[in-house]
Length: 349
Image (tube, rainbow, N blue to C red):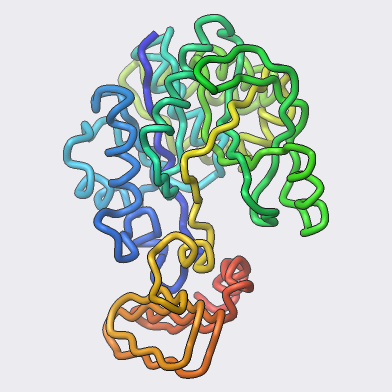
C-alpha cells in the first residue's frame, strides 16, 4: 500500500494579482521567501514518499515552468490539464494514472500554494491518516485545521464520532461540511468545535474511484475511457477534459459520501488566499508593515507593500495593500483583498 502524493498546481492565483498571473501564478512565486510555494510543497512532501511517487497536476500553460522548478520530479509525473475543470477532474485524472501503476496505492492530495510552518507536525498528521486506512480502507480522510479565529474565507467541517487515535491525533467521522460563512456563522462554528477545510485528502485510490463511480457516474465513465486509452499507449486527455463538467471534489464527492472522515490538526497552516493572508504570514517591521522591494514607509502601519521595479513611498496610511506588478498597480484596504479575483476578471483582458 505505497503512498503516492498528488500536488494540485493548476490554479491561476487571481487573488494575488498583479504579481500572480496566468502565465506565472502564485504557486510558482516566492513572495520574498526562500523558495517558491510549489518548491516548498515538494520538499515538504518528499519526507512522505519517493520522488518517483510524487505527481504534479498543472496546466499546459505553465507545465514547462513547473518542470524547470522541479527537476527532481520525473517529467512523466507532471500531468498537464489542457483546461481547468476544478479539483474533482484534477484528482480523478491523477487517480487514473496512479491506479494503472499501483491498484492498491494510497493517495495523498495537497494544494501547491499553502504555507505550513511546522512541517514535522504536518508529516505526523499525514502518517497517522495513512496508518488509519489500514483499519478503515473505505474512508476518505481530510485534514481539518484547528481554527484560531473566525474566518469567512474558508469552508468548515463539523467532526463527529472518534474512530481511532494515536499520540494526540484523532480520526473522526465527518458530521457535515459547510460553505464559507458570514462573520456571525463563523463565530458559531468556532464555538461549536468546527474545523477549517484545508483541501488536503488521504484515501486509497480504489476507494476514491468507487466514490467517483457512485456520485459522478458520467465523469467516472469518461475517466475509465481515459484510463483505457492510457493503458493502450494512447492519450485521450483532451477528450476527457472537453466532456467533463467543472466541479470541486468537495461538492462532487466529499459532501455526498458516507465515508468522509477528518483529522483535526494544527501545524501553522495558511492557504495564502489573499494579500491580507500573506501579510499575516510574512515577518513585518515594528509597526506591522510587510514590505518587499524598494519601499519607503513613513507613519504607516499594518500595510502590505510589494515593489518589483519602482520605488514605492507610503505615508500616513494603515491596513493598506499596495502591489506593483509588471503592468499594473493594486491599491486596496487589506480587509478587501479577498475580493481581488472578481475585480481582476473585470479589468484584465
